[in-house]
Length: 310
Image (cartoon, rainbow, N blue to C red; front, side, top):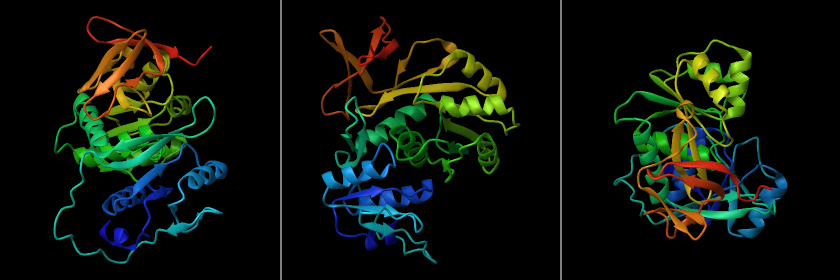
């Protein structure tokens, strides 16, 4: 991180497109040391990347050697033969510093930026780990099928390991056999961060997999029947995360326990006329929940679909 930070160009923003989760983390941390904001595009489509780069004229791309982005200034990450010397002092990041901007496509298809401060990313990771029962010193390894540039991927497969001191598998397995092999490459308690699409494929293939301590799913609704099949296949429990780009992860549930979501620690719901808003210390203002929800007296809620759905 220290060596890469010294070699980065003097810019204010960077598109971190590194494919390895480890290399992405090194680039993310190096950018933070240089005071640079990392842009997290919602897709790798060239048109999307060029549009974002055009909106942020001071940006450049951090890419792998075999993956330059045509039409955008690219800095290629090269593996160093030796480590740089340890920094004389541990870097300090203010909690209110904007370190990333996540983009959502929205109903118009145009990328909508959502600024993420360091305090928000660490608070969500702390609250998620506490809810899942992760304790300091746990020999837990995180294997993720989701991209680390995606908000759920960043929170669950990058921030969760570094905040709680977990092992982070660098790869992004795609097919069931890849997921089986990635799980076999790590020891201790395995935490699989994934999606309903990947779970369905694994259940259908019926490949034997190493024991998994817990599955964390998001990005799409997970049916009770699929969750039940996945729990049998992986011999574990399946939990879901509910969130959206504007606020990050805000609630969790074990799918088989019912359809009600439980807010993460430090997150609250307030009603503004007919709309529900999420509030937390790390959010500068309450953020509107994009889904139609009903909230019970205990603060648990049920999701009925997106407001934009017809």
